[in-house]
Length: 606
Ligand code: F6R
Image (cartoon, protein in one colour):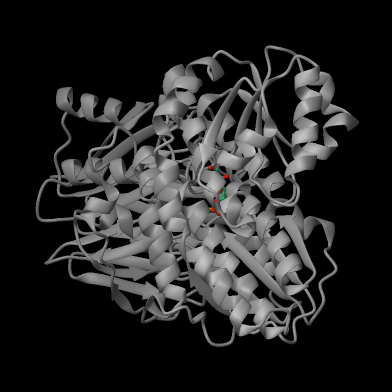
C-alpha cells in the first residue's frame, strides 16, 4: 500500500527511483512522483495514474540530482489527482508517506491557525507543513523531522528530503515497514527489499518506532525511546529473474505457472528434503492445544477456511476462523491453551498484524504462515513458517495461496500426529498423496487453453456463481474473489447445499454456475445441487475429474476435467482452474490483470 524509495547516490537519482517504483507499483498505482535536491534546490515531478505517466513526464521535464525520494500511491485521503500525489512539499521540505496519519485534522487546524495552509486533501501534507513550520522556527532539518514525528499519530513509513541538503534523508517507521539499503558510498531506503533489489542486497529493516538519519556515510538509527539502536544488516538476495515476467504476458500468468515448482519447494522444505518426515519447526506441537484460531484477510482467509476442515477432520482439533479486520472488534474469547495462526502473503497486512497483536498475550502460541520471512507478522510471531512461494507480484494472489495451503496441510498432519489421531503409517500415506500435488498441478495447468475458450462466454456474464461443498466451499469463495477482483464481473461463492435457501433465485440462463466437485464423499450431494440448478435453466460449468464428469451425466454447459486427486488435498489442485478462469476471463474483458483497479498488493492500512 503505497511504495516509497529514497536515494542518496553517486549517480542521477531519478532513473534509479523510477526503476525502483516500477518494482513497487504492485503496492499502488493511483499516482507517482519523485523529488530531488540538485545544487541545493528541492524540486519535484508528479503524475496521476500509472508510473509510465511519470516516466513520460520526466522525458519532457527531467529532474536532475543525486539525492531524492519517490512514491507510488494507493489513495486513502484524497482522490487520485495531481495535487494529492506525493512527494508533498511545503517550502523547503518534501515528504513521502505510506500509511495514515490519524490526527491529521487536528494538525491541519493547528497549522492553519498559524497560517500554514494545505493545498491537497491528503493527511500527508500536514507532515510536510509541520516540518516547514519547525524550520521556520529555527530548527535544523533533523530537529524539524523529529519534532514533526513526535506529533504524529497513526501508522506510517515516512521519508523527509530538505532543500539545501544533498546528503540527508530522515526516515521513520511506525506501523508500516521500511528498509534501508547500503551500497558503496550510497544509501537507499525502500518500503521493501524488492524495491532495492537491483541497487543493493545489504538490507537493514527498521523496527517499530525507529527513526533513521541517513547520509551517504551510513544510517544512524534511533529506537522509539530516542536511543541509538543497532539493527542488524542482512543479505537479502532477491533473484531479479523471480521479479520479472519471464516471458509471460502477466505476472499472474507466470505465478500461476510457477505453482508446481514452488509447491514442491514448500513440500521439500517441511518434509526433510522429500524424505517424508515432517520437519516443521521445533516448538510447533499441538498435543496440549485445545483449539486453533486461524486469522487472515482475503485469499489468505480462504486458505484458513480450508485448513479448518483439515484440522478438524485430520486432527480432531477444533478450529475457528476469523477475518482479521473483524477479529479484534468482536472481543473473541480466546483460550490460553489455544494456538493462533496468522496467514499472510506479505506479512504486512495491517488488519492481520493488529489481530496478531490482539491475540498475543491471550493464547499459548502465535504462529504465522507468511511468504516474506522478514515481514512484521513473521517477526512478531513465536514461530513463523515461510511458504517458499518466492516473490508474488500479481495483485491477485495465486502461488502464495496454494503454498499457504500446502503448509497448512502439513500443520494439520502434524496436529493429527501430535494428538494421536493419525499413525506414522497414515501420515506417510497422506504425505505421499500430498507430494503428488506438484505433478497434478502441472497437469491442471494444461487446462489453460480450454479455459481460455470458455472465458470468452464467461466474460459476457454480469453475474457468476461458484458452488462447492466441504472444503470445496471455501474454494468456491476463492474462485469468486479471484474472478471479481481482476475481471470486475460480480461473482459469489456459495456452499452448494445453501443454494436453495435463497441464492437459487438468482439462477437464469444468463448466470453461469461454476461447480467445483471432485470425486469425494460429497460428490453425489453436490451433483444433486447442480441438477437443481440445471432444472431451472442454469448454465453449469463443472470442474471435476474424469470419473466425476462421467458420473454427472449430460446437461452441463461445459466441463473441465482435472486429474484425480486425494479428496483431502483436492482444494489445492482446484485452485488452479479457478485462477485460470479468472485470468482468461480478465484477458477476454481486457482488464488490467496484474494491477486491477482500486486494489493494491500489500494492504498496510486498516
Ligand atoms: C486476493 C488477494 C487478497 C490478499 C489479502 C491478504 O487475490 O491477494 O485478498 O489475500 O489482501 O493479503 P496478505 O496475504 O498479504 O495478508
